[in-house]
Amino acid sequence: MRQLFVTLFVGVVLTTPGILRAQSATDYPSRPIKLVVGFAPGGATDTLARLLTGVLGQELGQTVYVENIAGASGYIAWRNVAASTPDGYTLLLAENAVAIRPGFKDMTPIFDPVTEFDAVASVAHSPLALCVADAVPVNSVKDLIAYSHSSGKTLNYASAGMGSVAQLVWEVVKDGAKIDALSVPYRGGGPAMAAIIAGQVDIIMASSQVAKPLVEDKRIKALAVTGKERSPALPDVPTMAEAGVKHADVDLQFWFGVFGPKGLPADVKAKLEKAIQKALESPAVGERLAALDIKPEFGPGAALQMRLQNEIKNWSTFIEAKGLKAN
Image (cartoon, rainbow, N blue to C red; front, side, top):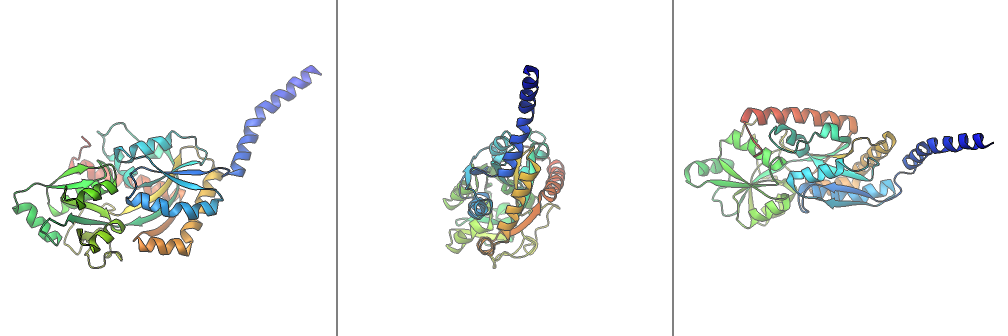
């Protein structure tokens, strides 16, 4: 009898973790979900995250809240999420900076999003706008090129830090337009834009939705946008192509995706993927995103994973060809 009891007890102990795992996956989500953003409040990623959390929470039946973990061009947030338990309660809304950092071979510590993250779903894309401080005496990209060559002044540009989308997109534009400028890194798009408004720096690559009201209030000037077509938010601003800027074959727009720590249960990931798709299909969300010049772009986790790998390859090629260094 004692032997039978021991056998049954051991069997229960050995099978209980599996039962608990099944229950946790079936009941997911049973508590609030944290959506991490790697920059300070006010930038494009933060704006999109806060717009999504409400409707995503409705789809999942749980509160979804944003936590800003700024620093190191997003790396601190990425590391935080990658080190979290892969249970679906800590997620990351990342922009394509996560595909840019691996291109800097000298940037330490090394971070490989392909091995550190599980891709959950693509969310959206949005153009950037090349903007200058109101005091900079130019009104077009042509003017800016001429000014940079003749003023005798070294221009500078604000970015969300080395390896950020805004910084690398500017590197591509700068290379295509042959403009020289020094990088001034900030802790996010919000602080970088504040510096432009204050006239502390000359140039910024900003999300079009953040630039729109500032351009309309004549606090900054937009010279071009990175989309293939003109932005509905800035319809009078030409595209880079219209402005005569030829550039390397890389994506100059923001793209956004949701990631989780490596090892997310398949059924948890499937629930998140479905909820994100439904949230993006909501007419209310579509209208609010359109007003921000953000285009919904749902893609399943497998497609986002492929996009991540392709972007890493493309940006690595550009960074190596131009000899860009993190330090």
